[in-house]
Length: 430
Image (cartoon, rainbow, N blue to C red; front, side):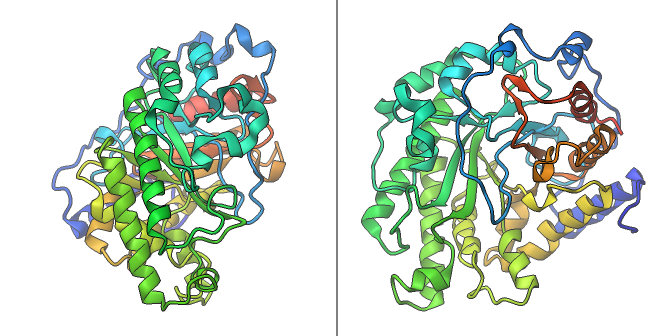
């Protein structure tokens, strides 16, 4: 099939053949209808004036480090749209597509408590949410004061420390924002400095911390976790780097990483048995390195597949791991998303030691960067509408959007035409 085809029937056939190949589904939904604005929960008035009365005074933003290596995605938009069921057993129920916001403008639990109504006026289905360690210092503490950036650290957290945060989130009576996530940075010098795969005591603490995060998510009614595997000045998933700390063969590292993945997923599943783990990058991250001629042992992220294999092995039925495919940031053409979908499902699986688990539980998602390269005009509104609609159509359920300079909570520096583009794409518009 030509890469830039706009034949939706052709894409449906591609997914049908994929379903037969994997033998995961024998029935297919053939309805291609679109959801209306009212069924999506967006009124015309909301689209024309999508922010509430508190939007005129922007509040301080939570700060995030820049991501120079991979232009990491910190802002997600997961879309709900009535489109075709494109893949068997997708990450969302009954083929529904969801849009989540997560990024530099992500908000903490206290902001959610006070502004959840205004937040729901944005054309999303959920958001990433920051949990502060010290609630009085959130805006000045940076990532060091965010639970998600300290999960991999030496401190063992307890659920009692976060009762107020849970109550913040339970105050929100969400109608549309049903897809909310807690972020976790897996490899940052902020917390992971000095961590090795063979430190049992340290990993007991990490497993405990994942259990705490999952319990917060469960008690607050959240969907799951956002996993960020990018190296922030600490290369946890690099065998060459880690071997300088503990000199063992690659096979020993691979087995240890896989074991740690099982331990982490067991802790998560104890509280969130149907968790969605939305990873900003998945197996396709080291796959890109392999495509450039590196062996998996040499790759900067060569241990990531083993760790994620462990997650998959311990993952209950009903839970999913979404490859968020951050490489899609600048994509404008539908064919690019189709090619990426095949990369996730047909190529990256070759890096997994548990391919059957991979085929059942790994789903394709995509990230888009609205102001790509800090260029607010990189996409025209129509180009962005088409990009979001294509990503939504091709994905297994989740699509996310990243921004740096513009924000949604409250609305900041976003032209109304882009809001309309997102809302239209969210409804399945082309």
